[in-house]
Image 1 (cartoon, rainbow, N blue to C red):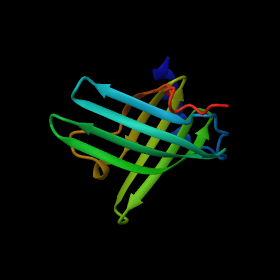
Image 2: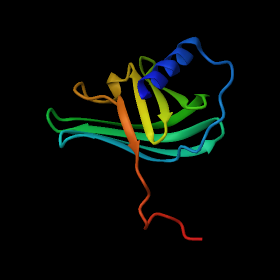
Image 3: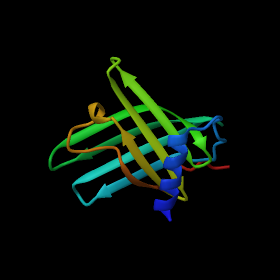
Image 4: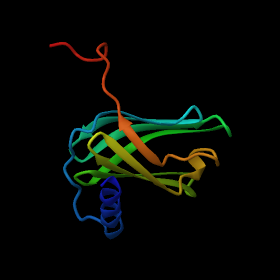
Length: 138
């Protein structure tokens, strides 16, 4: 099912969207890991109804590889957001975020200059639950 949601989202991205879509509460930390070798984390905070801020970081041990940056993503469908970032006019990165329940699928386009050659931001991240210490008390 997640694959079909992702495929439908890519169609939306390719065809474009005239208006930004309203956001749902997607704040939180999303993580993924591949054994002891590779891991990634995305922290998302809501900015407004049309966008959110995020920080993404990845790393692997064998071979050694890291990548990290922060930016803003804009809703293009109720469960899909897009972020575009460029530096030095020649290096750009486009991330697509597809949300489904507590899963977040990330697809990258042309982001090689933002991480090492042997790792990338792509993957399925899982939303983590807040610890008792981080919850606000009424």
